[in-house]
Image (cartoon, rainbow, N blue to C red; front, side, top):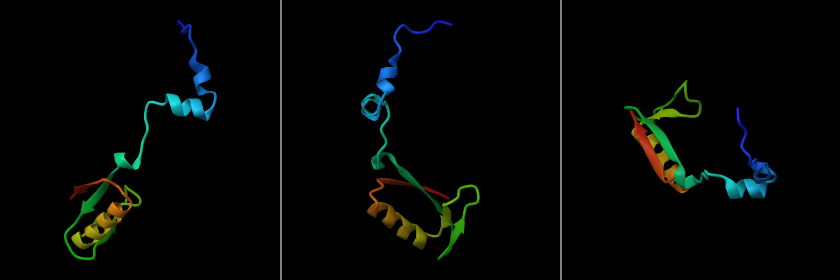
Amino acid sequence: MLFPDYRPRRLRQNDAFRRMMRETRLSVDDFIFPLFAIKGKGVKNPIDSMPGHYQLSIDNLIKTAKKAYELRIPAIMLFG
């Protein structure tokens, strides 16, 4: 196995270098909030395989979407 002649360890020395050289930067603009719809009114069923997520009726979906908007989450995706 051949090793590169140039070893970029110095680029990982401190946080300033790591921030400057990183390839990916996430911000709130990159998030899509998943919402799961279900028939009914006042329904909020937990999804066992996704802790913290719920199947929501339309009235609860609207409230949750408004909260997401207030938190500046730019997009939601509806499932159901």
